[in-house]
Length: 81
Image 1 (tube, rainbow, N blue to C red):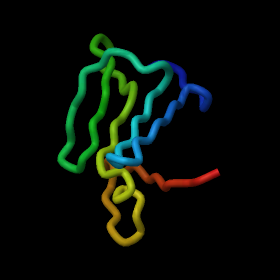
Image 2 (spheres, helix red, strand yellow):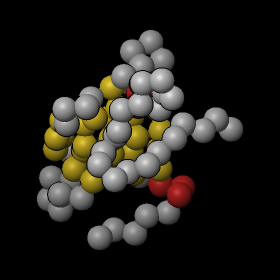
Image 3 (cartoon, helix red, strand yellow):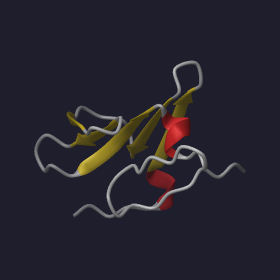
Image 4 (cartoon, helix red, strand yellow):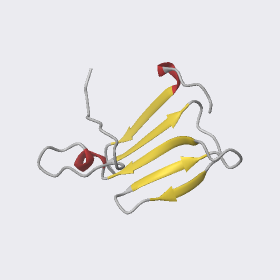
């Protein structure tokens, strides 16, 4: 498994379409797996390691009134700095 450091995480948000793009390192070619909850998992085509996520309807994933889990067992919250 590749080693990950916090500086490797890249995040972009398209406010108009409410879509978040999360990349572990530089964005790269990947194979996408779409889950039923509006999450796309991006995997390296050779190693199958997760290299990124796309979250459609992102604000609902983090809304206290309409919580939708991103992935089973994964806890996350939206934090502004």
